[in-house]
Amino acid sequence: MRRVARIPHLLRCPAVALLLLTMAAVLIHGYHLGIEDQDVYLAAVHKELSPDLYPVNSVFFTEQMKSSFFIPAIAGSIRMLHIPVPWAIFLWQIGAIYLVLLGCRQIACLCFKSEQARWCGVGLITVLLTLPIAGTALFVVDPYLHPRALAAGATLMALSACMRKRWPAVLGWLAAAAIMHPLMALFGISLVIFAGVELPLRRGVLSPAASYALLPLGLLSPPSGAWNEATLARRYYFPVMWTWYEWLGLIAPVLMMFWFWRIARRKGMESLELLSIRTAVFALFQFAVGALMTIPEATRQLSSMQPMRWLHIFYFIFLLTMGGLVGEFLLKDKTWRWLVLFVPLAVTMCWVQRDSFKHSGHVDWPWQTPKNAWAQAFAWSDANTPRDAIFATDPKYMALHGEDSYGMRALARRSLLAENQKDPGAATVFPTLAPEWQEQVHAQLGIEGFGWPEFHRLNTRYGVSWVVLPARADVPLDCPYRNEAAQVCRVR
Image: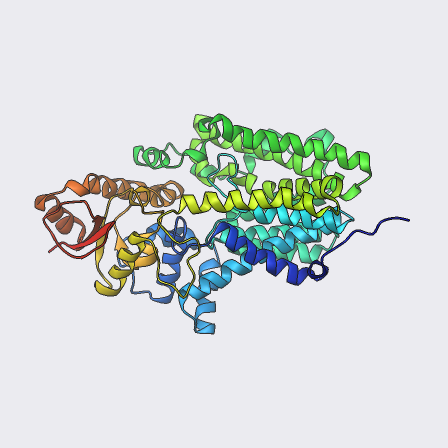
């Protein structure tokens, strides 16, 4: 008599199981408010809610938001629900992770017959959300709200609809991805086309000439010196600058997708066979396009479109397929095998994230004040400085010891002179901003050792009225706030 696989009762209700996995993902990978790219997105939300904020330099975070509905959606939900910004951002993050896992579950149901395989694929995605993706400077899903996660979730839902031949749903989900993150949606649209359209692969999908026709040739003007300097902070634009292990993160998964295709073909898993081979071909095509856009000197400026970030959506399919096959043929219904795989992975990923944010809380719960000392200094600045204040700081302040990548614009809600970690993104995408970015960054270099003449120059040239500096900096200014890591000083 055939043995019936044991499925935990909760996993028989996918909605509940996915919600539990979503909360587990937050506990494993952590959650942070106002870090990394959220210095751009959260500042834009504040600007949308209060247009009088950021009277100076808002162009560095608003210009790139014009093609996305992400900021109006977040701000609209805050106005409609009348909830504090931290609560809204946290709930959106929960929704984004849930949507990603739901899309993975939908695809897994089409590719695998057993529940063990389906949940193993989704589970592997859950415990590896903060896995770095080759040399792209991306995680599978960031430990903070980013429109990239919403676009990925919508793309996965579109792909599952495509595999079911439900074309209106495909168009709807792709449109949702596009309004959240247009650039990442382009890669999703490309993958859906490869997965769902009968392409003449033997004759070549696109000729080189046709590929060039897709490129924005208006960006092919010779880059300025300021633009070249801004790209130095964006090494991930150029695959030729990646390290050997970053290249391994590109080559190995693509080769494994071909291997998964052979396994699926041998086992008669038709849907998985089709998805695997087409995803692998998608990867080869996108790599060729990325190489054309980043390697030749004539197209170097196209690198600002980040063409290698096709790996983001590719990694979802790669990890989901690998997890499903592991669950199907290795773990099966053996509880101890599941524990041997997932417990060490979850513990390792949690430890890495806690180590990465060792000066902060693992989860920035929306009802708590931030534990990070720099974030506390930014919060003090929000509460105790004029709304039209203009701040200066070290252009690489996010990399300072103990700073943990918290963004000043996001948490202080004040204008800031150009910095050298997030603003280069705007300067490379919009080359006209590059000279202004370069000038302001250079004006702040060595700010920890400035004397009164240098601070006076910042005040007269840029209107700087406040600075945030490391607590160790000995400056001739009145500093009404100081903690163990940072100080906030007035420039009179």
